[in-house]
Image (cartoon, rainbow, N blue to C red; front, side):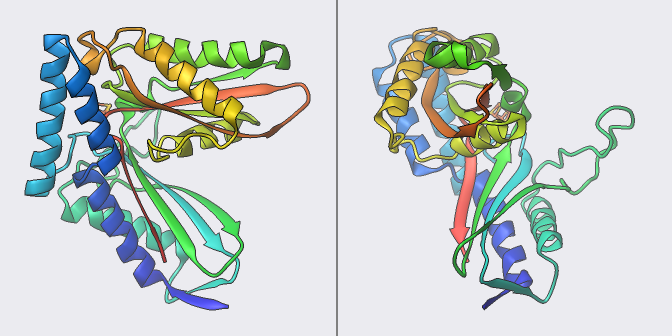
Length: 281
Ligand code: SF4
């Protein structure tokens, strides 16, 4: 059994929330640069230049990349040999999020009752925590600061098996088409196929943080990712919805076993301010 401190966990979550909000991942920055180099539409070029400059300003001045600093989503893969000391696991994560949003002057974007009161909790908590118990004695943390301009454009479909690959492909591309300019393109499209209703959505959310250089290890899924990406870019929505060559930077699919009667597909859209950071304790 390996002891890990909740104080260390709290500090790690704070650092991850801050870095995710202030420093865009190098692969996304590079993909925007590539999009700019090949773009021919003047308005889209302007949007991509602004996005690039915004990334640089945020990093240099320690400012958030976007005014919507997101709802904090934490994927914690905790080794079963880990024993947490000096605190409580989930409370430490919430405290880490609270500290980051306070210290970094990040917008507090969470309301307690979603339907009637909609009163701001004033500390961006509670964060959403997904914990998995995995082999080993380490803890891997992935923090996603999820803006809701793009979250609101996400969809889930409970397809039936006869829909097949064509049905999944159509659902992915149609989701991007319906979203149009609303999720601040160029977007990153996370897709979850299989599982059940909620697992499909979780797979999709996690897929949005996959490095852009990685393709699905199964060549059939990798080909579907590429085909869906090309079809989304052929929609011509373009950067900021101004029209242009790059509507999406990536399509990443995760899948899981499902029921014989089902083919769930969830599409989680992330904007160009795709803020995520990870570490292992
Ligand atoms: S969708 Fe993304 S870039 Fe657009 S406002 Fe929300 S967080 Fe910002």
